[in-house]
Structure formats: C-alpha cells, structure tokens
Image (spheres, rainbow, N blue to C red):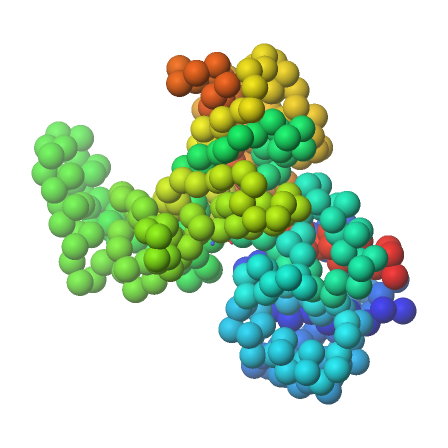
Length: 372
Ligand code: HSE
C-alpha cells in the first residue's frame, strides 16, 4: 500500500483538493494517507475513513523519507526549503506540487492530463519523479483551447486575462471583500438616497479608496471599483512574470522544446472571487470554418462548455458567477475577427482553484496510484 503524505492540505488550494478527493471517493482507494503540518504537528489530523491520526511534522525529513508520494499545496517557500534536503537525503519518491518553484526544471513535468497525458505516461516510464501543477491561467487556457492546439492549428495566441482575487491567495480574497465592505459602509446612506447626486457618490467612493483606513495591505491598491494590471514579479523584458509564464509553461505542457507557439498578453487582476477569465486573439495557421473551430474546442475534453455567441447566453453562462465552484471550462464569444480570416476571437472562464490548481494534482495522484 503506497504511503501518501499531504502537506498544505488546510490552505485554500489544499482544502479544495481535500473537498474534491472526498467527492470522488479518492480516500477509499488503496493508499495510506498521512497528514503533515508546518505548525501543528502532534495535534489530531482529519478523520479519513473513520480513522484519525496525529499530524506529522512537515519539516521532519526522516518522516517524509518514509513516504512513496508527497503532495504539497504548502507553497514555494516550503518547497524551496524541504525538497532539496529530502532529495539530498536519498529520497526517491514522487513529489507532486502546486507551487511554481520546480515547474521549469528539466526533471519536472507540468501536469494537466487532459492536455498532456501522453507526456505524463512517458515521464513515468522514464523515471521522472516531480510532477508540478501549472500556472492557473496557463492551465485554464490550454483546457479551453486544447482542441486547436492538439490539431496544431495555432500560430500564436494573445491572452488578455481577468484574474480573480483567489489567485493572489486567501488573504487577498478576504481583502477584496473587506474593500467592498468598507466602501459600502462608508457610503451606504448616500447610495440608498435615490435623489443623491451620482457624481458626488462617485467622488466620495473614489476618495474613500485613497484614505489610510481603506484596506489594501495585501493588494497595495484598490481592486474593488478598480483593477490591477500587473500580476507577479517584474521581468527584464517588461512582461510581468504571470505574462512570461504563458509562453514558457504553455509550450512546456504542450511538449515543445522552446517557444514554438508564441503566447503573450496583459494579465490583469479584477474583482472576481475565484474564476479567471481570458480574452483570446488566436492566429490560426490556416483559414478554417468557424463551425469547425467550435467543434474542435467543444469536443476536446468533457469539461469544455461551449457558449453560443449570443448575448443572453453569454451573460448567463460565460461569467465567473456561473462557473465558480464547478469544473466547467466555459468558452464563448467564438467568432472570426475583422483582423483577417484566420483570426479567431474567444473568451473563456474557469475556476482558478479547481482546474487552475487542485484538480490537475488530484488527477496526477490518481494516475500514479493506478500505475504503481
Ligand atoms: N499566479 C496566479 C494568479 C495564481 O496570481 O492569479 C495561479 O497560478
């Protein structure tokens, strides 16, 4: 029976992972779970199949060494600290990670099995031991446009993103709501006075976002009533690191050596809770009928939900509130662009915590358990 250690299972991504594992009855499969903590070792762990054990210490290399598989959602700092020590100690188990630290290493595969199951099987055969979840925006883009990539129809893609607060972390998600609460509380009398002057209300709210009481410790700016067109670090070429990941990780997942398909755009944080949206401009290698484009997108994987390019259906179904908490990858606004007959417009929405984070890891664990 394989021994599988879970680290960071109580954080936001980890909790979604646990929820999905329970929903899919993964814990009834044949492996022994061990739960670790970076701060509460010794306290009682979660009840699984009627059994509860004390939490193990997530920094105890000797304890980790006994595991066959480690699945961590603890974050990059943990990976950077513990992973090298564990490998140096001679541990040769499987490391499944939500953090980006090891993603671009040659001895790591980025996992997104509806896109790269063949690469995963090949990597397992070759003895690759590190399997890392991709950046959420990249995974969601590939899930949405997988049919076009699979047929090698894409010359390049521009992806302009609308990314949820959850991508920045649980504290940011809460801060976004705190911002809403602060503005609502401070301006509710004037909002509810239908005869109040809208420009005075606008001025009041804008000024409130600039006060020192306005909660912005985590974002450093207003997200509510505004947006932030920069995500992650600055890269020397003027891209944000989130934008850099598009081409780097996207091509790596597709199994390309180097940047075979250019992917670029502006990544923007908006006041959505947990769904990332993206507007695509896709340059195809040839002119194909729009109905064929739709078929390829829709039939690529069971999670794509094609939304007809029609106003009401788009408003109802192609938005974060419709997709949040589901595994759907909504894709719509599919049409030829005025830019030329081989230019396609599309818009997609996916849950950042599910296909964007926890689900590829859960599925990788299952692939491993089925295989070994
Ligand atoms: N970097 C993403 C974001 C998180 O900030 O939205 C998912 O990888």
